[in-house]
Length: 291
Image (cartoon, rainbow, N blue to C red; front, side, top):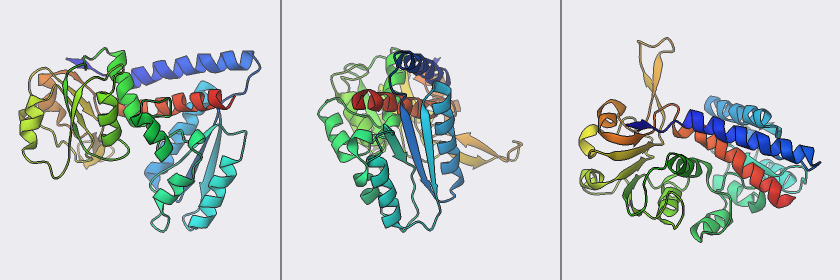
């Protein structure tokens, strides 16, 4: 069994980006600049955004953090997005989700300039991805593809089951893995809450990508020997034996699935660290495009 180590791989990618930034600076070219917008006081969101800002500092990017209060109106947020769209100093930016309930997320994401959409969520970028045109890929699926490629996981002709159909992970994963590309050329089935006989599908799968957000959903009796497992989920579970009072679990029951797997991502330390690394890679691309 090989552990797909996202922590190490993301560190490798950040080191590669840092070298590229050094080259840009030595040539007198513009340093990539990433901005992040956060609305409200959601603890998890603040942690994620803080990690993104720290990662920018690590690779030598410029970064801007825009913090807005919970009571910010939709109109005020859209005005701030328009300001970022028109700011030539900023190459790319993200709007951290979730947003407060009184703000329409779809309206906000549509307002983001597609050429600065380093999250890869804008319909223009999703369409370009589907057509296999150069674009910003959604960071989490992009990270999964990078892990598969760097670890040389066989995907061509393989039977893949993606559990979850979100626009952020499930659907992009199904598109990318079916394309003619590195870590692609697979035959992909998308499963979801209405899928009948899911176990029959997973038992035939060579690769399973689980992105449900249900802790330890995939168990050992649902997979065959030699399977590759990509676990995108992360959930806090109460655990009195831990000093923190909780433990982190993925969508895969690691103890029962890992003994059967050829390749598997851990939680934490698998897909999670890759998401930020690929956001940085998208920002580097955005800077090159704008230059």
